[in-house]
Image 1 (cartoon, rainbow, N blue to C red):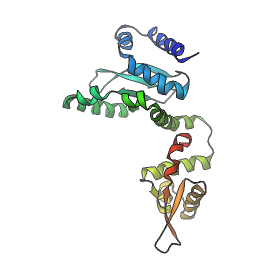
Image 2: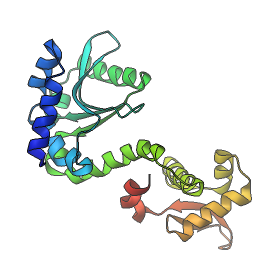
Image 3: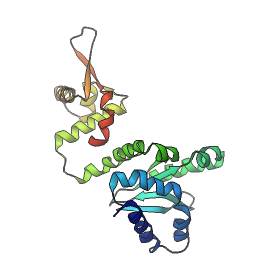
Image 4: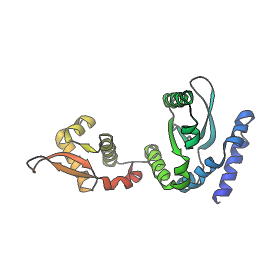
Length: 226
């Protein structure tokens, strides 16, 4: 089944299960930008529309209905995906709309939803960036559903932690973060150095490693391991 066939079946599947405004919203809201997102980003990444819901209705903090462009809901995971055009979300947005959007995203986070947004321009002209970033986000959830060996899991967590720490970490920070002894922390970091993920940084004497820097040339590979 090609994209057009799959997309038509996907929309019909959801139309048949909706009534009233929820159905009308899908017919009106799923327009060019949303279809382009599926065609250029979602379909190349996933190859199916399983667990994906278009124009997904949620109540906001005021009790008003809000329709996310897409919701990916496999089991306990609640991921909302938005495609935002510059004109509607920047040029034509007044202070009240801006505040409401920020409040809504905070409320959705409190309700357990993870909201991610892509610009229409990136979806249209640079879908490879969107695919890479979306894969990285989804991999945070997918790896929980697959068996992962303990060393692999720890190494991934150290890589994430290093990025959170602006790319540089010290063994003492790893010791505190993982609640392990200093020697084990240093050994883990040296192992990641041998695999090319970190670069050791030496002190003034040029002999003792004082911290470890994330190897920036590995950025393109994050989507495959995180």
